[in-house]
Image 1 (cartoon, helix red, strand yellow):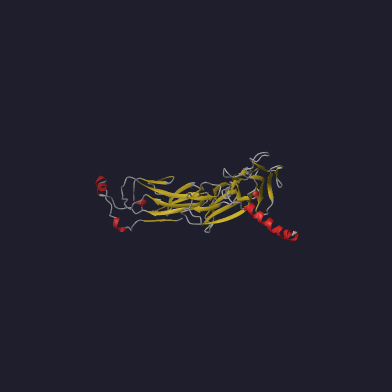
Image 2: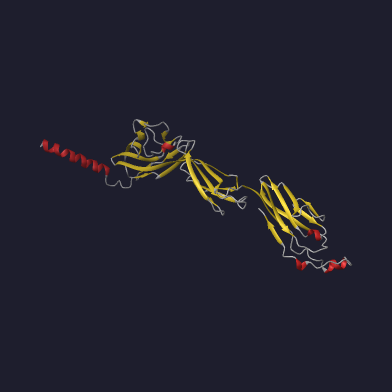
Length: 361
């Protein structure tokens, strides 16, 4: 009856719809699209999407549609009779789809990439009689950062302070900064929005207790980011300002009376470099046989007046430091005695203590 046919019509319509979606023999229809595509801020990128049909398969594509999964809004539509439509933005364009041609390529070009373009996009082919096919592509938007590293010039503080700074500017996604150092220390990282929308500037400080041993040493800043094929390594030469560290060398404990010449050297390290050297003794002025020449003290000959404690005072822009060294002259050697006869000296070698060198820093 008519009433029975009317009641059966919805079930018949549902069966036809199922058959259109799962028509036997259509299992070889493939939609080819990458799972992920990336581009850079301000550049263009193509989202590929192709329909691959068996040679024996016949189909009619009526519409191509791109939507964003986040809100299901259409961003680009191509109708086989009406052509393209871009509801959201004119920054999009179908690469190959044309009116009057078979619609097999739904690839979409996106121009002037922005951070907000990032997301998952669905490519949809509407076909007859096979139904529809879809694929999802994740569009990622990158920004390559500019990376710099520099020393933070510091003085001796006795407390941890930043001695190096590494900055990755305008990164998307945020860069990862690590440090490599044999000096110990720790990193302190911070982030802030970059100048371009959607980018981040990452700053990392390398912190340690500064010392003279740290001055001139290297640490390495390593910057990693998804747009880099390999990490970027930036070497930083550390600068620590410190007053002079002084010691005196050149005395081997075996100076003897009558020795024709000897010398002492004032060894000093400082940053900035030393500006002056001054020699004296704990008794006051230098002995007559000692002559100062900058960092060196020349002695000729070695006589009794050299039995004293010498002082070297070194100055720099950060102050002055000094070191002391006590010289103990031994009696003349046999060779010296034979040359200088009939002069003779009382033996003194056993009456002195071992040489002592002391420095102040």
